Length: 58
Image (spheres, rainbow, N blue to C red):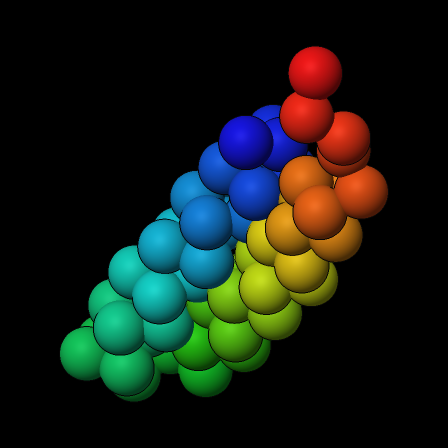
């Protein structure tokens, strides 16, 4: 498994937590940061997935 996939999932989780907390406390900036982190995580996960599919088994 590519490290980008692991880091991407971690960013998505962090973004979900930020977004949820932001919604609970009414902090629009925290919600926006959470959404940004989730999006970055999805992209990073996709890059890692693409790298995994390009690796040839040895």
